[in-house]
Image (tube, rainbow, N blue to C red; front, side, top):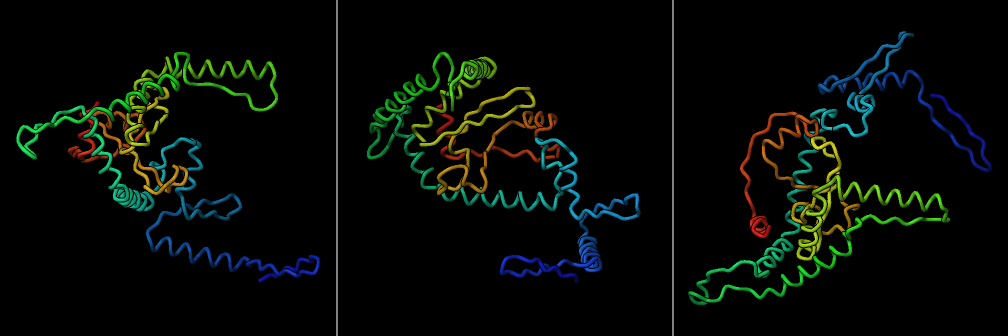
Length: 289
């Protein structure tokens, strides 16, 4: 064991540096533990006869892939993916249970929109089953006013120059504004319809989300509306930045899923088809669309 005394003003520090023999013994013990546990080990021999031991080859494969947007599920081993999947499923169940009161209130609110007529038998047969449309009027008014403000005919993107103004910065701001509005209004045809639908649900649910990502099948950026009941997060979270995990429930057909697997967006593994079981909230939302 080597010791180094470093002179500092009125302070004497001792730094312990492990010797070569201790490092070698530590590596041998760790190597034995890895082998006994059946975990993969990457051993590379150097030109000088020494060897480099990588106790976690999955990290090396990620670094060597060179693709920042690579699917980590294709690179991580099963002993890492399985605990992650179990934890996410447990989080999903806990998050769903934490917002049961909100789901119950939201479901009741959808019944009060007055869009459907119920043939009631209580308190007597033939009793009125209509609801006053005051809630629906408030929702549609908010939707129309917000749509006009947030999605004008020229496009939703606006630019603001931070710092000293100059003709070059002003021209750059104009170019950025025109290009982004062109992309949204011309290259993303689903943007306007999903945005309009989002404004309707925003006033009812209190929260709504937009998911913008690059679609490998369409070979372009897409913008999708995500209802609040499809985005599962802790109910006590004040922002998405504070959430440990954000779970998006996606419903798709078997054919659409297979296309995403072939395109490389999802892992190409065998899945067991399941039947979609709608909750009461999802059924009411479907009838409103």
